[in-house]
Length: 412
Ligand SMILES: O=C(O)C1=C[C@@H](OP(=O)(O)O)[C@@H](O)[C@H](O)C1
Ligand SMILES: C=C(OP(=O)(O)O)C(=O)O
Image 1: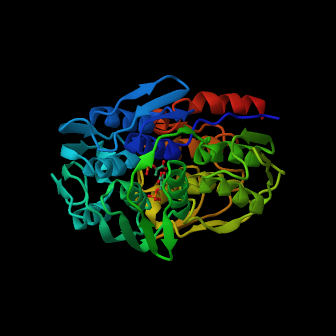
Image 2: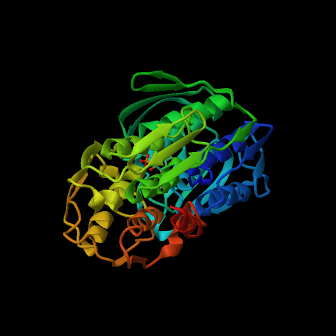
Image 3: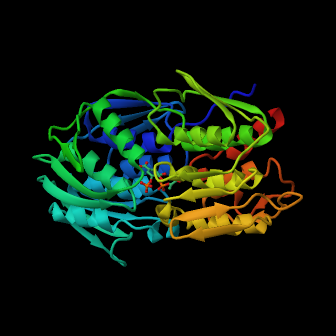
């Protein structure tokens, strides 16, 4: 029975780094994710003058409630949207001039609703080239706080950034949200703020964050539930069994809910106190599923859909078009390369069962998107001849993916 150790959660590591940097005292992160996104986040903090000490299994951050230690900095956020959206928000609470740039892929991704909200709170934030995109400069002079309205219908990360900022303002924040996707990520933020001593109050669409700052702590990072989806899916399509320790009933991450989709399709799933196990039953049924809450696992489901006995329709995932690539079209194009019939709409994708004789091997176009590669690696468990134009882009969240997945394949 393969037991797979999944690396730490990207989302939890990014939040823990922000909270640790903002807290009063020294925070220790236990088993943080070591990948391009989180190393980019840590490097960004170092550029802003925070001390980040790293050993393979623990990272230590000296918190600075007063903000960055340097008056000027140039920060490169790589491909990471958490870095590119959370760090300018952290910097806004300090005093100095901070410039943030990002990779071409991340430069294309939006952040205008967050920019607008920060400006409404009095932050002097300028985009250098295109309004609502990197590069940008924050001329920071602390944030007073107050009321602000936010549209987080494109990304919950805008709301997370403002929630994290709240305790660093002088009077706290009252955030009214007009639309919101990826709600479980906001729940992760609120739970982690609590671990650093701050209680957010939710009154319907209004989030109330008190001032007063964060306290340092020791924080253990859960395994990444989105990454685990490839390993659970592997069990479902091969009829094998995979257990992931560290992700059980109390897990913070909504993406663990992907196993419920596999269960609906026919896999046997057991979520225990400390671990989750998926066993393929030899049967996969078609399904219609709303993935608004767990859209990072949309490509995982799309990539296993051709093995289902009926159509798989995934709905309410418009914002997957503004991720590392347009994921709806990237999934559709790659499925068509395998001979699978697919249709897409503004916020949905529908995939027909594989062609008679099964999908055919082809080169997968990665679009520099780690999730496209990891998802179609699952398809490759049953379809010979699948290759990738850019296998290395998995470094964003899981540099060792191909080795680990290869090892699992041999054991299934
Ligand atoms: O807050 C976070 O850590 C994340 C939120 C989600 O983004 P959206 O809110 O943009 O859907 C998710 O897709 C991303 O991988 C990580
Ligand atoms: C969308 C993703 O990443 P981010 O938005 O954090 O760059 C992802 O990891 O699938």
